[in-house]
Image (cartoon, rainbow, N blue to C red; front, side, top):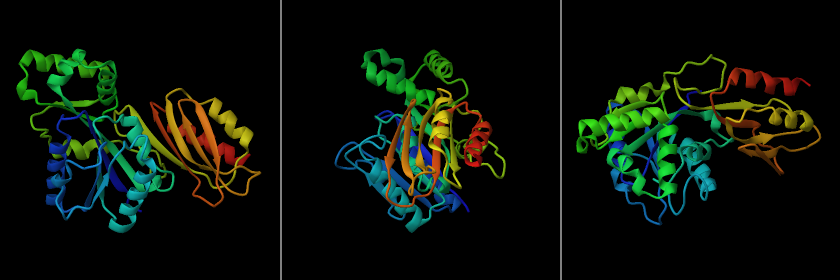
Length: 305
């Protein structure tokens, strides 16, 4: 089954995300690929939706952030796109206030996570804003840091407004936070399209469901249980997880239960919620520098008990 490619566009307000989106959509149109867009706005009205041509399927997520208040709406609209439009690629433009990990977590619903190929997080950073970040609130400064740390491709935008020494300082700063990111000095968010498409450079075995983009910090993994497992064994598995497993969510069925339970895990805290219907036994992981092959072996061992 061909999976739908997903790109997450991240970056603080006014950094140049919508300008980037316009260019990406034009490139996809020239390539002849069926493309869809999801736009997330904190307010009641979408400001940037006119950037998307009417022939491109568009879903607008208003009055909230993907990462917290409107996750249910996100899942419903993303599933509708996959069923009705069957796009080859979806670009998700997040709000400027969104944390990259939370957005990634928001789109990886256990119901259809195995239909998606997350290509990466493209962040746009306003170079001048970064250099003047000490004038910002601590919360905004930390958000900018998080957007840099978890980028797969980082556009250091509005570089034409900076001196050569400021550009050098900017590159030095971001590479200190994220040494493996591909950081490009840009003007008007112009980026070679091959740099975007090459985010799929990571290789995985034909039978693996892990998605690891080459040299990235974050990676995702989807495991599908074929049978129920013992609750005690699963809890022991959770206790042995590394700290760099940031999120897990999905459906898991225990040997003494008729139906699966909805399972969520965030920074070491597990939550189980009963379900009253059969659900796909997919479990989604988001982590950093994880040996997914070893993790997969541990999960298989749970099923063999």
